[in-house]
Amino acid sequence: MRDTASESLSKWTNSDQGSRIGARDDLRRLDLEAVMLCLFGEHLDSISGPEQPVVKALDDVRLECMLHPNQPGLLKWLQYQRKLDKGSQTLRRFAAEAVANRRSQPSP
Image (tube, helix red, strand yellow):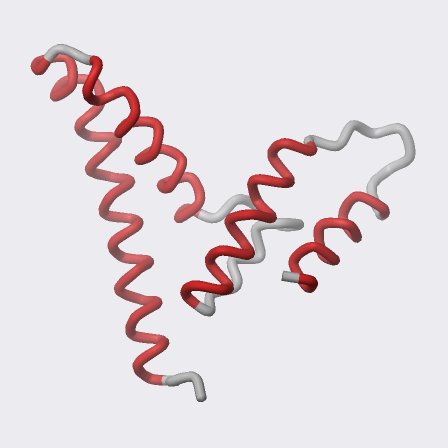
């Protein structure tokens, strides 16, 4: 947790003087980085680098799941199902890779 927070603070302190800091987006990245590191042992490098596909997929799936119950059936299928399926596949792939990594390198 300290390492990810330090990385975020370093990003903020090394940014150009007078430039805007997207605190909400940075804190979201910090949160996801810490969760992924603690739960899966995976370092996403998304704090100072580009957003990883798994982070985008997580956001997409979360949003689609919130919108899904409020949409008519045909509209859900036409408009949202493809995005939900694509995000779900990305998350499943990430989870399978994380499990494979943990099995090949068990923690003490």
